[in-house]
Length: 261
Length: 376
Ligand SMILES: Nc1ncnc2c1ncn2[C@@H]1O[C@H](COP(=O)(O)OP(=O)(O)OP(=O)(O)O)[C@@H](O)[C@H]1O
Ligand SMILES: [Mg+2]
Image (cartoon, rainbow over all chains, first blue to last red; front, side):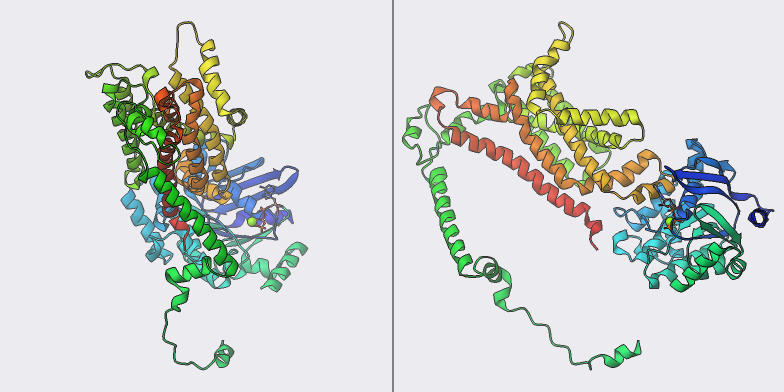
């Protein structure tokens, strides 16, 4: 079992350098063991969807990748840079890794445009004018350029999430992390956000996406990771994984998901 | 979808919009709803109205109609004859220079007067969002320096005036302005420090806040004026006003820090995480994301504390500093003017009120403007 896992984990695109490497990562919250020997290799340009029951450690895993959480054991490398207490390395990594949250986390006191230009101006030291041009370009790409002067509170949830995606893209990241980007949205808004993510996937962006949208996983994911109780239980191509679940845990999870939809 | 249309009522011609009945809108409607909504409410309204009007007429009679506005060379007999019937504003006419400027040399009064004008100008400029740029800090530094030069003198042909002779309104403004100008940044640093991950910084901030909050301002002022000099080396002396000023800054700083911390706590963790994920540094995150939101949320309690400290500066009277209130008290010590406290305290109160009310009104406007983004 574990042999096949390892095999699949490293099988995809061995020619490209790994964008993200997790090697036997362990993390505890107090006594709670939330990540257990998590190993994952994501190649440049690869799209990985992470699913699993609530509390299985999906968020914790991707939050470790840009060090919103720290891991206690094992190794995480992003673009070849190892995550450690070295602040310089952390800055370099956060510049390259964009993140989209379940609750959008836009800055409510700044306009949409300011939300998108703040980090490029101050972190990337981009001239203001250029940053605004870049921001308008991405806002156009997520199809809300006309909202640039509004405040986040004036937008719908779906629009806010698309702004959050644009905001992350304005930093020109090489890797994008999504933590359940559509779970806080009304059903009619889910599609507009998923469409945005599909078109982003088409540009060849490296993506790790925690989501339960199986249709999305089938459409764009190169691999699907199934987590349960802090472990990666199965990894595989979406169709293969969904049609032939190897473990009881995944079978149970899939039946629950399908019932829920 | 289709069954909804089936069940929908047949469309009728839209009724033309009408204005609401006159009895329910405008002044008449408001009166009816709030003052005369029933016989009890009508009775209360009429009774209260009667007392208010009677009192107002009495006050106008006392303050204006029967008032004495000036008397020749301290002959206050005319005033005393009118005790309880008319106000003796002559005491203000006679003593206003003393109340405003204390024992500052009379022929140099233009200097503290100019300082008061500079302070007010500084407040007005700072209040305008147009001027909220880096240059504002420079404007403050220059103005405060100019005020120091004006008050002390000793240069540019202005005779030197020792601090012991300063007094009145200008002292109150100095204590309040310098106090809040230094206490506010201090408070922000302390509030941030209390949430620091570094245990040493956190401990220092907690101890500072708890210690200072645990003692009354009066005892801090006493310590500053009596005990502090004992610890200084022989011959070294720090100005009494400066010592009081430092005590006020430390005291206000602790209170404001708690207000600011309340604002920091009300921000969601997501705001910090989003800023972190974008790669903003600690100070960028704090300056652009956290503080702007936290401070907006606490404008009302912040201004409440500001107003409280503006008035608390009057406590310096117990260590013999001549602020506005002390000057007012002293003005009526002279035998000729004894007994005209009401007029003097009304005037002093009115001056305090003008400053505090302006602060309050301004903060309401600011709050509405800065929180516009929260409106849908
Ligand atoms: N800050 C924290 N302190 C303590 N425990 C935490 C913390 N954050 C998460 N946990 C716990 O860690 C475990 C994994 O949480 P995590 O958020 O990674 O799960 P998840 O797979 O993302 O779940 P969900 O689908 O509900 O988002 C859960 O049991 C959770 O209760
Ligand atoms: Mg989660």
